Length: 106
Image 1 (cartoon, rainbow, N blue to C red):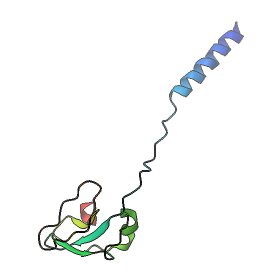
Image 2 (tube, rainbow, N blue to C red; image 1 turned 60 degrees about the horizontal axis):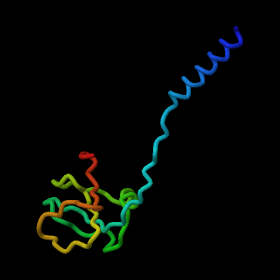
Image 3 (cartoon, rainbow, N blue to C red; image 1 turned 90 degrees about the vertical axis):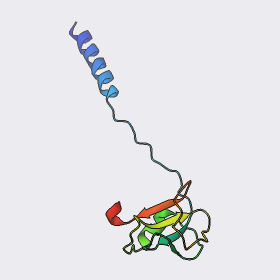
Image 4 (cartoon, helix red, strand yellow; image 1 turned 120 degrees about the horizontal axis):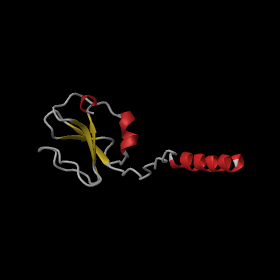
């Protein structure tokens, strides 16, 4: 009788432990878009394009930029298309566009 109880107990332990294994995290492997990055001037308008019209991912640009003080919460914005209006407010990010926040805003 002890053999059966020991076997049943071992089976119950195996089922119990397997029910509580942590779930594996699924990595987000979606590639970042290549964008044209622009600085944001202190008045919120578009500044100069970072490295002309060359395209970079957000991770490629982050270690290379220095954010100056600006009234806008964004330090830089990346757009899929080249921007031509440098007088009015910088267009909001949409679609695959991205923005880089100032350190105090992150």
